[in-house]
Structure formats: structure tokens, C-alpha cells
Image 1 (cartoon, rainbow over the protein chains, first blue to last red):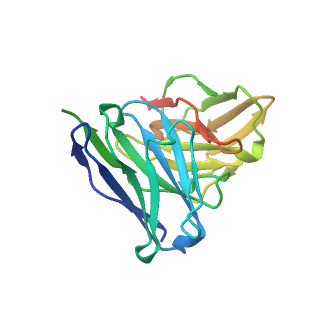
Image 2: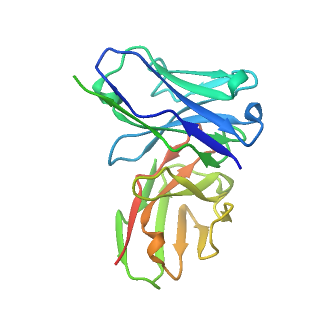
Length: 119
Length: 106
């Protein structure tokens, strides 16, 4: 069974750093792209970008370029989304999802990680 | 930009629901998906390439394209269909989502 299991909820202060994770199982982790999607509470979905675990090819949505960093640790089939300095506007639920290519559907989704940034 | 209508739909069990998604620029039918998000849950892929059901999607769900309007149709509504439905295009980078249509089952 394909699963993407994300790390738990986070409560942070503005200016702090954060790295959340997405662990894949039940499939060849290096064979599929991992996308990150943001959902502000009560709002819609925003695609942040994708990373391919095999060669670390990374595609950022220009709206998020420079604001976040994607990474992967192939040894533990885990993808990461990282912030160096959080803002209150980063408060959202972050989902990871799997796709065959950058231009194919997001077939499987993680359960989401809630990030609350507040002073 | 993908614009969905209506924003909210309130229907009864057994009814038929129709959700529309209009793209401001051309979207190839091979690159349009529908996602279902139930309250407190992650989105789930429902349909892809306009009319193909994802694994586990009941055949009460169907998708179509007419001109620039993509449509998700749900027949014989059941209480478990209560959710927010999003369209998504993934043919043009970056992929984008519609703003969502909330379906309430009375």
C-alpha cells in the first residue's frame, strides 16, 4: 500500500526555522516526484513545487522560490520542506503528494502537517 | 486561473450535483484533475485527465469537457459525498487549483 506519512504539527515563532518531513512507503520512493502543496486554513490549495528523489531535480513555483527549500534523504525515503525564517503568513497546512512527473496528476497525498507561526 | 462554480451546493441524497471549472487559458483535457477534500482530511484524487476515475472512485462520479468548461458530475448523491471539490490543471507549470466548491448533503 502506497503511503506518504508526514511529520506532526508544529507551533513556531516568527523568525524561527523549521523542517517538516514526508516519508514514502509501499513503492519505489526514487521513482516518483514529491510535490508540496500549501493550504491556508479555510482557503484553497497552492502548489509550491516538486522534487525528484532520484536526481534531486527541483522545480519551484515562482511564488515560493527563495522562500522554502526542498530536500530528500533517499536512505530513509523521506522528503523535506524547510524554512530558514518563518513568517506568520506561513501558517497553513502543508501536504506532500506523489506524481509520476511534474505534469501528471497528484495520485497519493500525505495526511498534512499543520504549521502555526505566531508570536 | 481556474474558476469554479458554484461556490457552494446544497443538495439532497439521491440528487445530481454538477460542478464547473473554467480555465482562463487553454487546458488540455489530458491535464485536468478533480480532487475531493472531506472536512479535516487531506485532498484525494478523484478524477484525472478530465474523465478517468482514480482508483476507488465510484462510477457515480464522472468528468467531461465542453468548450472551455470542465464539469464534474455526481449522480445519486450519498451523505459521504459531502466535501469540497477542487479542479486542478497540471499541464502548465506551475499546476494550479480552482478555489473549490463545497457540496453539502442536506
